[in-house]
Amino acid sequence: MKKVIISLLVAGAAIAANAQDKALLETLVKKGMLTQQEAAQIAKESVAVTPATKSTKSIKIFGGAQGWYTWAEDSVKSGNNAQNPQQESGFTLRYVKLGVEADVGAGWSATVVTDFGTEGAGRNYLDKVVASKKIDLDYINGTLQLGLRKVNMGYEQNMCDFGQLAIERSIATNFFTRGEGLNESRNFGSRTVGVFWDGNITQVEGLYYSLAVTSGLTESTDDFLTSAQNSSALSFYASMGYKNVAEINGEALAYDFGVNFGYAPQGMYNTVVGDSRGSIWGINPYATFNWRGLTFIAEFFLQQYEDYQFNNGICRTPLGSNLTVAYKMDIGEWGAIEPVARWSYVYANGGAVYSEFSGLGFNQATTGYIGVNWYATPSVKTSLGYEFGYFDQESISAGALCDRLYSNSVRAQVQVLF
Image (cartoon, rainbow, N blue to C red; front, side):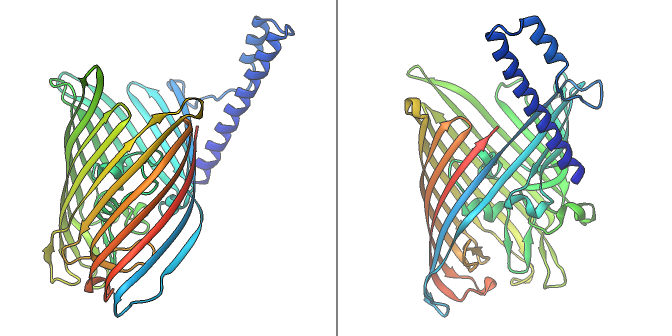
């Protein structure tokens, strides 16, 4: 891991030095102190990034960072645990990413992305590590990948961390794709290690699909990277969708709709009842539209899992949804501004959906988010958002023993990309 970090830092330093030399040479040419030919010769002899293999066609270095401030308050309104509001606040570096993508020829490429923020701490600071092969035959067109990445489960979950409309992902997204509970882990969705195929149906423009066979462990499990090869069962995912662009009154309307499906034979892991493992399956239809700066995203979750801790292996069937609306407006030399609103809902069907800040579990949760993003440039985004949450129906499985909880949170974010 240290070798990877050192390599990335050296490569970044080399590119920075090269960029500074180029700017200096251009200035000297403009002032007549060097000819264009002399500057070109000096540039050839300056600092350069040299690939290890001759077949490497290109190397791209990219990254970004996100700093957050969060203030939150949870208030238990009734029940045995009724209490004064609990507050917390503080600053954090949520994402600090540095990545390298190399095209090594013949359709092969490699991508390594690290994340040194708080989000990456639980997975050895790795965000994505894949070897990819592009395939284009008569009836097969797509990309085959092997390594660590997210599976296609949850539209918001699979949006880029730096491309989120709301500052934080919703309670439904976290519940269904990174579900963690009392003495249990739901290994379904998010990052895992496996083989992934993302393909296109060439006969129908815009029709796409994906398939994946992965480890039975995901990032919901501690040390899932080192334990991936020891998982006792594989998990399976598939999806299909259609995206295209239509024209309305001379304006382009981009749309995308589809459905994700997954099955994990031993995706539910419980540490109390004899380290029991139960199956999970889930379905996730979604639809998105973008027209004249207006973005609309809707998705629905339905899962079923075997509950051995509190229900003797009898299945529970939670459901939930997200609805997000944003409108991005150009404000001239000030960049662009984007108001955002999101509604999210989870019904746990006797399981437990947890409040983020108090850790108390309930059978039902509804949250509403309003905020605004300001893009000073395409690479610099500042965000401010408020989210209210209403949790009710005590969950015995979570040991909450309280009837209702109100949550309030305010987040501010500054994001810089390169």
